[in-house]
Every structure is written in C-alpha cells, then in structure tokens.
Image (cartoon, rainbow, N blue to C red):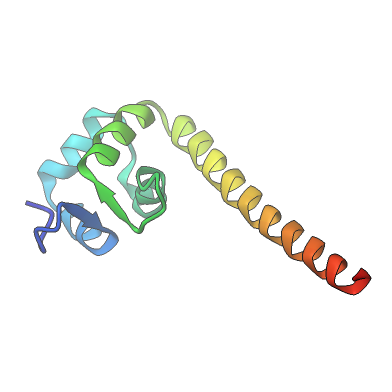
Length: 104
C-alpha cells in the first residue's frame, strides 16, 4: 500500500506520506517507536544506504529498534559513527595517495 510505484522498495517520500495513515502510526506505536523522528527512523531502517527500504529492512529494523526512545537514539549514534568512519577512511586513503604521488 505504501509502495506507490510498486518497485518493491519504499522511498523516503513514500515512507513520509504513509506516516500520515493512523494505522501506520499505530503500527509504530506497537513497536514503541516514535514517528516524530521519521527521517532518522528511515535512515536507520535503510541499512544498505540505498535511499530506499526493502520490506526485509523495514521489518528487521522495526524489530531491532523496538523499545524506548533511548534505543533509537543509540542506534542513530551507531549509524552516524559508521558513516563518519567511512568518511575518515576515504580521507585517509586520499591523503595516502597524495603523499605517495609527491614522494614518487
């Protein structure tokens, strides 16, 4: 129902629009998830970083995030640290390449 383009994936726009449905809000409430942080929630559900959420990512993510707001905050921190770690790795590789090219 939320997958408007029938792609089998849920985009942020589709996700955001679907959150206005009272049944969806009730579903998230049953998992003790706060939909007021919907964009953060979507990022956490989008495990592969594709900008879309598969049904598996959605269900697994909701189960993983079940609990109080503290649980979602911790998971958001894990996400942010992982993202920053990737950025640092790219920066380090770039610096190593620059150093190698100046010494060659």
